[in-house]
View 1: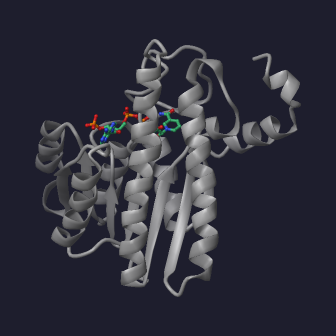
View 2: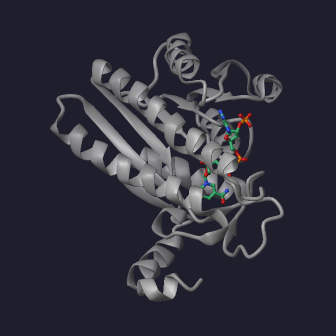
View 3: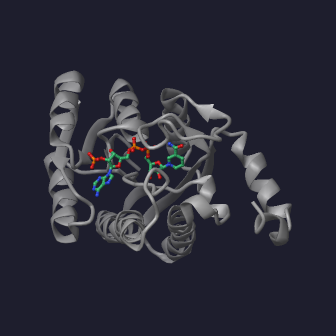
Length: 241
Ligand SMILES: NC(=O)c1ccc[n+]([C@@H]2O[C@H](COP(=O)([O-])OP(=O)(O)OC[C@H]3O[C@@H](n4cnc5c(N)ncnc54)[C@H](OP(=O)(O)O)[C@@H]3O)[C@@H](O)[C@H]2O)c1
């Protein structure tokens, strides 16, 4: 299986942007997307010929799906698609409108592009889809209920598709990335964080996990311990956080 061409959604800041930089350094043909086209243009100047980009809002489903396929075509094909674009509600006062936005980006946008990527790789006969979930997938949390729920959806959804992929003739790998806390625009100024990974450290570990074709990976690795703790803590304790 070829493995030299990668597309990353949400590449205009944070983990996606750093992952794009590291991929270029390692010689991957790299495609980046996001709404802030000026950032993508700056990245093109910084990263050069191996970097391709496409302005994309993942909530504009038809345009986003078309954009993904066109970007892959422009790059001469894609082997890995990283569905990283995501938003959190934590900075905003919660309202049903904010909650809906989180679902539109993190769930509906994810599902639409996941299906496009899956069908593309099925036709191609091989490929790897990487979904950016979170440790937040493991528990509900009052300050970010829609965000945590959206990440639970992503991990569960990918598990289902991993089973489906095993039964398919195509060789499709599905990698669930579960970061704890990492420095990014999303977490800037957020209180109560611990074990916060520098963006470049987190991005390097993400790429390593992708290259090892893991089914799931904790970023950084010590977050596996927190995942295990959440599983053994009784619900009545979690309900009182
Ligand atoms: N940082 C952490 O501690 C942490 C922990 C667990 C999971 N994660 C996950 O990691 C991913 C990256 O987050 P980050 O921390 O790097 O945050 P970030 O710096 O805020 O980056 C988010 C990216 O998503 C893109 N995006 C947001 N809404 C979009 C939309 N409607 N259409 C297209 N792109 C959109 C943004 O691009 P534009 O604004 O240009 O569109 C940006 O490039 C997210 O899925 C997040 O949930 C992060």
